[in-house]
Amino acid sequence: MEQQPASGPTVSDEKGTSTGAILGGAVYEMSSGKIAHARAFVREFLLELRSRHGMNVSPRAVDTAQLIVSELATNVAKYAPGPCQVDLEASGGLLRISVWDSGPLLPAPEQADPSRVGRHGLEIVLLACQSFSVHREPVGKRVRVEIPLHDSPGRTPA
Image (cartoon, rainbow, N blue to C red; front, side, top):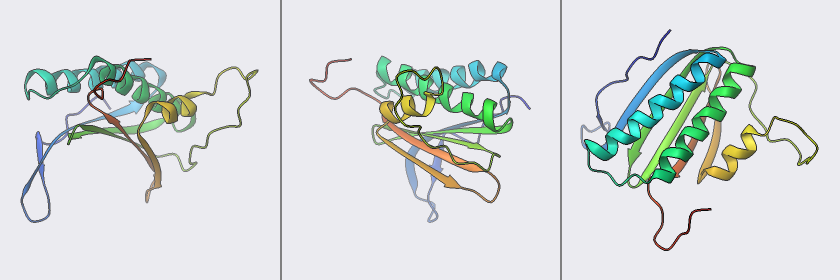
């Protein structure tokens, strides 16, 4: 299954009132070869927010969102190969990233170990995002993170 666009660019709440959110989504049959496709989808979504919707999206947000999706997609490819859905929602200066996969195991960070080689993806995601949650779904799980779309005034990039 290749990338498939989600529904339109805005969403309404149950009462039909526009929430002002801009949405994007893609579905992949996840394998290591598709991780770059997921990263590219995120980059294109954020660049379109900037160019087409006039939203303030910092280069740091573009890089951070791609890193987060890359790490989450890598975990899907390693531990829950199969379908993977990446949903993006931009509103109120935040980007919400949601990654669903069919795997039943919930991710958990490992104990700090400077001698460990690899398996640092979740640690990277936790450091890079503003909020993080994992929810069981009827099938699989959904990981949700939030990052700011722009840098705070006076904040110096690391």
